[in-house]
Length: 307
Ligand SMILES: [Zn+2]
Image 1 (cartoon, rainbow, N blue to C red):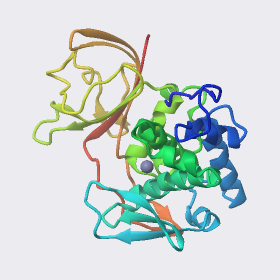
Image 2: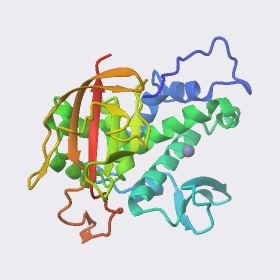
Image 3: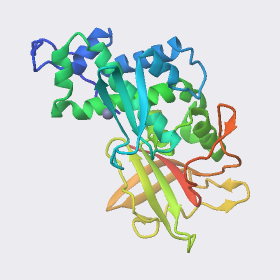
């Protein structure tokens, strides 16, 4: 998912042009920033005795001496940010976030803290982290931290083995959602690390079950079908045609697929499940809690294409 950075110190002296992510990897004895971040997250979980999901983040914030504060004053599009105050780091999160999104946001900001702490003796590297050319890498690395803190890949593979497409069903989809207590968005994005090229969330237009539109799309590599596309108008043939809803849920009738999108023939495998076979609200610290808005009349489609 994230392009690995080569450790190349020879061409760049430790100066204002230092490669801060390569230094981050080196200081953590890793061959790439991604490996360094994964290892730091694993060690943080172990240090805080977090052995079984769902992973709470309170112990990690305590260990890193980070405070979390909810704010009504952040713009709606800002989910959270990290502030350095005289007392230490404070993660300010938007009060309007659902509790599932809040967890992902806090975990992402903890990724920034892990970066800063590793580079604490290298102020020039911390300054370099803020250079525009580093933003995309830094953000991707902190997204990785959030995923590793809340949904470690090793744990997830235990459910996806031997191939997520062959074992995926509505029950598994919901059990992962409740095992890690993350948002749908975070969960769907994580599927891309399990050998899936494209995750589409379809919604049926309520007036007619025959019209399906893509409401969200997450992709890796070159395969992308944007939100808004409809199954009947933009994809040929209609790839949802073979799917029937009955009392037992969605039937996957066409694991092999071939269709045309914008003149390009796409061929591969897919798995499709009902996105909300919810029977009861999730348990959090022993209590049933209100959840994200219902994604009724929705279907999740995982796709892997032949290259
Ligand atoms: Zn960030």
